[in-house]
Image (tube, rainbow over the protein chains, first blue to last red):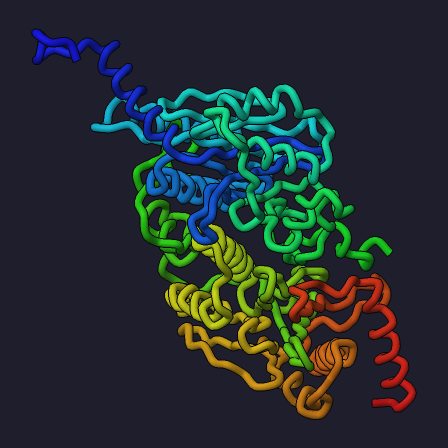
Length: 271
Length: 272
């Protein structure tokens, strides 16, 4: 800070210091890439931990991805699950939206940024998969509560700028999952300093998708053998198999009386 | 819904680390939404629709749960196509007897409870954990039960650790008992249990267990006026759910028609 005025810090300087502090914290972490593909939205993070997730399910069509301080974004994730479950329980499952959650996060991050002793060192994405790619919504929220409505792709964390440059060049609408994952993994492995790129193995990655063709809970983690096959250039696997890890027979409504999935619904009454 | 949840920043209760229970979160943050926290006016018990008979049968590698479709209010049939068996998560089913409105609300809360835990903890709750969570919800309903609004569920699920289907029954005070092989609850359960003892054997296949469950409900409906038999005219069959290593699913209604037809034909031929 400026010498000679030890007791007064201008609001501009205070905000700038806080923003610098948060940005530094975020830039130390490894990156997360969120990108649309033909059947949904993919989340790819370099994360060797199987237990501490950077990408998680919030609700039927909504997922969360974050970079920065784990305890802070974990706190926000849990708050998001509580927000979504309470809202869906009070109204209906279809009334829980990414837009509503992004707003609540923005207000929370904004208040913490200006009023608390230190801002959250996090950057998050709230994404909702629609029935068609046009219906997909991706919101990026930064440490100060700003929200951006993103289309196509987002990168957050340490090497975000270079990764976004790479995505701008190579990402295309309607990519297959295997191509989208290969692109994200290649960009995550690139060295921002221009050195030799690293090849990231499936064990070093945390990958999940919001698959618009799944019933009710669209979130699915992609790991192990399936991830290895999707990333391998000689393997023909280009997409996650439909409905292989059975979703519950619960349908999309909140009311147990109306919650049967369409396929299994009554042939009786209308016969 | 409590103030602050729709607009503005997330209330501080949302950001408190700790509990992965949705019911605990509700009781701290929005207690009015809990069925057990509703004050009841003193006075006579009210008349509300009642759900009736649920049966559950284990088979090799899983368990079947079936419920009739009738709800009664005194001598009136309140509903003839009500669902009383629900999938509560990927590996469990719950069937309800007792006050229908409260029971459905309880199932709804239980479903959110299980999914909430799964999302926050990143892992499925154990089968016994689920059975115990349901017990604590029934316990919370004791005040209502004493005013005549009892809820008596039956819980069945596939135990991923042990690789078999298991059945749990409850009493109104929240007592939770594991049942062996088969069980039935509700107004027609006395007749159903009698039928189950004759029809059940070990090593049933899933198809045989479905047939046993449907025939048991047929017997219960024969002797209990509150249990609905198969409605041949409207083609309304019982709700039949299965849960095994593949997860929970319902037998589609068209697939039940031949099962019901076979039972009716057989029984009328033998005039029993």
